[in-house]
Figure 1 (cartoon, helix red, strand yellow):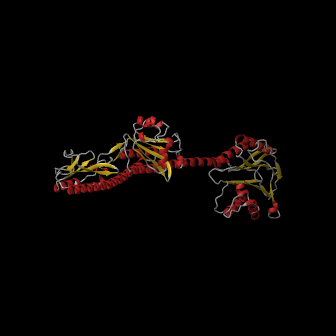
Figure 2: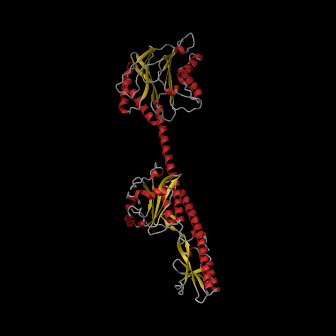
Figure 3: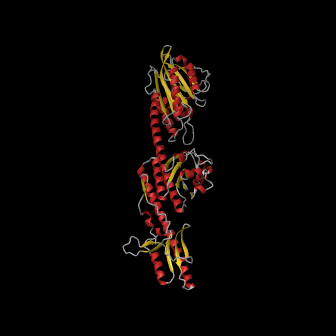
Length: 583
């Protein structure tokens, strides 16, 4: 009786630049007739009995077998026969609650009552069978229409590229075409919205963005007033319902029915755009006339909404990846700039050998070291700086740059270390927040006198290993350069002090940040100050004339062996200075 594949037949409907199949609504029994078997069965029954059974379409026209062999259809439409009187028995053929046609029994007045009763039973059975076949055919046709629409949508989404607005425009025009509706829009919730909270129960849609629309006026789209009071329609669809309203003018939940009348929309169908159980937005489609939406219509719109949600999620993912790649490029450039701010070619002084190394845990670090020349009373001195900025990443790197620039600007003389640190502290207190502070150790060495003068702002004290010509150094030869001083960036009135120590031939200074001593292995053991001192002592024992670079490399190598492959959470910075041994 019915041919489900007929769903895709007929001329195509075009919405924008998207060709979609014409919908087969199934409003009449003639939408399901193919070979004319039902009307021929009626004719065969009529040839056997005196009463007649005829088939009428939804408009009350008579469906009869075609009399011409070469007719395009095996059945044809004629006006209803005039002998249908008030005593005719009418049996409707129903599909999804509506009548799509009827079998009419026209009894012969002379026929016995038993024949009329049997004819009535035949008409009832024909109507029941026809309804069953039409229901199955409509369901099959709906599924074919749905699959065809989704196939077309998938193909078009692949062709349209990754522009989210274009993707949603394709989805909306396809939905209007296959559902035979007149207008619609797709709105998206804020990207950080989640669950039912994405739709607050307020009479405003100021938070949503209409990404695409068809045949809706600017006044309708720009009006922040929602369609329903408290946005109950949107809240229902994101809870998993598909909302179908035959007549907006008759629904008490509609907030301003006069808006619908002015816009010329009456029927309404809406579904959520959901990706991985997370609501992204809502698709809303409208008809100009009152219309009942079947289960198939609702399922089709829901499927299109799911496809559109996937397209939105994909487009957002691609956009995020583009931004991340751009950010990574910027971070690499910033990392290059930061590395250039830490000198690799250290200034040379007779009798002094210096080495420095920074190992950041990310592209941008918060550690600082600097080695440069300072003016001293008898000539140039060697300036040494080690610092650690609170935090990590971009904020710490920016603050580190500010500390270095301020220190370099104020570091004019080796005899004014405490004054230089104080001025740097005042600069940071003026430009930073209380939780943005820095630890700093600043020292200078006069190569003529081998005097080390130093000042600390809350930094871990460096160690000095005293050299003894007659034996290898031990822990007893390790001196910690402790001196008070508050971290930079807290108290602009902080007064810093300086201390001095005389270095002898072969002495080694090791300045570091807490990322070195706080490094941990997989047993969560901290490397600590003692292991760092032992690493320096080991290399000086095995190689008494080791250079500053050799001492530094051995310390880092011992650290790597201790922590293994465990990722570290803090930058590691070392500055090693050795006074050249005599002989």
